[in-house]
Image 1 (cartoon, one colour):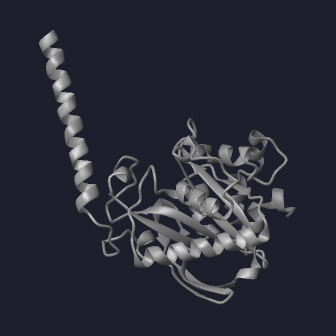
Image 2 (tube, rainbow, N blue to C red; image 1 turned 180 degrees about the vertical axis):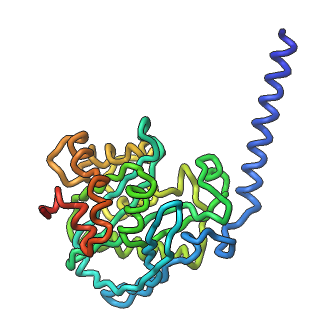
Image 3 (tube, one colour; image 1 turned 90 degrees about the vertical axis):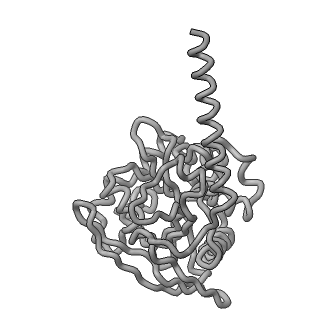
Length: 284
């Protein structure tokens, strides 16, 4: 029995050592790239040009989804005036019903013409790849900022994947919101020229949002928190720090700002963003 346990212990140690060597090899010898056989939804990067108080964004993703995973790959271009950026919203989509831990989060910016554009930090996947928390720890994906229409980024998760989607208003001054928008545009453009690896723990969707907010308001958040590693709880962290603009308690906010019931009926509405926010924005 002792010999069996000793052999089992050695086997576990050898297995751990091999895993660590594999991870170290990928960290040391693999470089991020812009040139791979990307999945269609990640194949075209946004292109950003900034001049004065305007931001021109090309390749804003606006896929339209059908049954059986089929979609039409559409993009459009738009020029934004920075003074037209009026609001920012925190979008959270947990992957599972029974545990909020794994999740995707992103920001969406509202403009004076009642339109919204989302910025989603994602793991850029190649053809044949699926997302894995574990693979994301060992330089398996590049980092990508998707700039997309809300019909795409919210509709995909709420209508096609049937994941819960929460769209929370963020409490911030207009000047801060505009600075945040500019900072994310600059980051997106930098990644289109100098790629980085995605990392499940340190360079993911929620940690990038955290870094952007910390740059603008260092006192708004405390130190690094475990809920950044389990982003399904990121709304709890934002709520505790007074970032979510509501007088409701957390559970009340989760009920009110869950948009799934409104997404399907609003997908063809030209004011999709306002329709899914009707509870908070006063839209009937």
